[in-house]
Image (cartoon, rainbow, N blue to C red; front, side, top):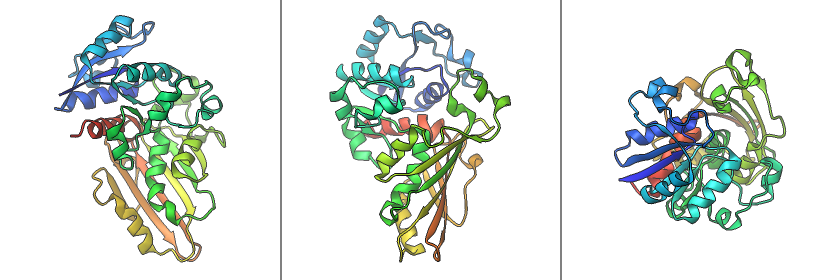
Length: 326
């Protein structure tokens, strides 16, 4: 049985992966941690999330003593922390020999020059970054198994790349157009007026400047136009993607491309039938639906995931399973 420490456990994603690890008979929770100045330290997780009343762990401050205890007792750490915080914690635990599953963006780019532009800091750990692998579970199985530094993808990139990677060889040079809508939990638990449920009305944000655009483009190997939207629902993502396919492409070619998921238990693909967010909320699944116009060679594919599950916690859980080979 592997022991997992969860840092940043008071947030939506941290609490979600705690529940998944607690329910996994092959794993145990070493401890739940928050920053030393967090107002949540010392509180039971169930006080913050009554739906997790069956989970008895208390949130401990991540002191130097706590970090040493993690090194002694844990096989891996999950970081559900801010990008700038994960930058240092991931390197420290990785260099001490623990497996790290980082849910932030601090290790998603191999190019160090991307971080000042998209995350506002200079990356200080070139050797650790060189060892990091992108944890898109259905696509990077071998890399996840063989590395102790796993950068779990963002929620929008997970929805988008799951839809696009099978058909990448069929794409023309025209940029795929991704319009995606996320529930408000994607903005995190911290109170902010513009993400308050009562203030949210469906609207685009981060237009032509969202940090997930280069993440998607890097992993796809092709530039994309990505427009995220904030919707007035709690959780889930629906990405509707329009692409142009090469001349001569047929529906049979598209179906064959998506057959890569025939043995992927969490991915469902349907032709001419499109998913709903409610189909996937509170599940680790991704539902894809597509329709092709053979006259214009345009394909529309929709991808639905739960942003806190397949877009974060359950994908991290997948990566843990792959890494520890069970």
